[in-house]
Image (cartoon, rainbow, N blue to C red; front, side):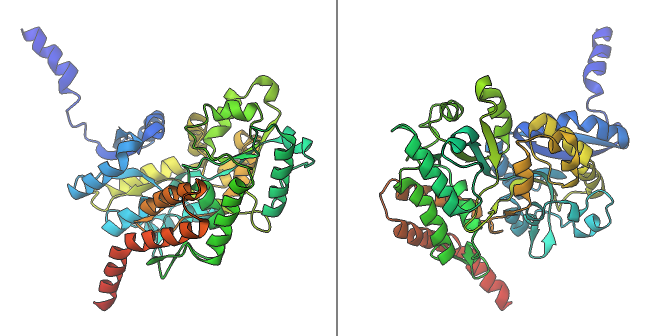
Length: 418
């Protein structure tokens, strides 16, 4: 019995014992939450007085878990934040602004980050998070089909790109298309809209601006690809395998993100590996902007270990650590200096992402944006299907957005009157 008791203490007693180190609670999501566990031991070696308690959370549950933790006053010290969550958490007062501590950091240098990616964390003139990895959307295309249609490269403007797509469509079989734009994804339309001079919301984020000339131009360009038969009216679930369809030449363009570099390298047949390439998005009259996305690292206002949490952010922000993170995940570094390493500089498929990251724009920094984005998807799908006209799409989206922003208008009006 005594021996059993000693074994029990050895196995279980030590795990609950305070070892004297400061414990930093870190919540990370999805695949990144799994991979970052490999990076933490080196941080703890460099900072022997700190122990990181990592909790891995599925993306599907992460947003709700953060809000629940805030309501229950049990937020972590540091967490991975989806780009669209930052405005919501700022509005709640859940995050700690980092301007002062970042200004004195020798590691986190704002000028080294891609402007659009860093700017997604700046709300009301204050900075609330540090980009952990960058995400954006660019073109993946069949370079051989483009050449056969008479184009040496992807045109950098809408008119030239449409001309190339029409030429590809004319050369293909009846069931072939020039581009695949899944109608249950709103990111391509959002990217075209972000290329316009007008904001997507007006009145300081109080009202929708989806009947503006810019959004009208962007949505008409988007819908025109379906009207001309350049894109199929299909969701991504209706295409059995986009990599196979792309390899077979059933479409020549797709707008997608960095995770597909690895997927296309693995899934494209060996004889097709030299027949695909990446390119930045064309714009209305020249190289266009795209979506500024990704994830950031934020420190929570209730944390009692802010200094140690910041040390973890600084460690994960080092260019060499970001490169290792890229190797493990395929997530793009948000810092320009990290892109000088041969691992990225010599990757021909990543070059277009490096170019595009210099031209990214964040969606409006309002807590309601995630709901508005989903409404763009829902209503645009109806317009592509012919259930409503493009003009009705814009009017409906404006009305729906104004309804979603009603509470925001009330809150801002109340604050102004105080």
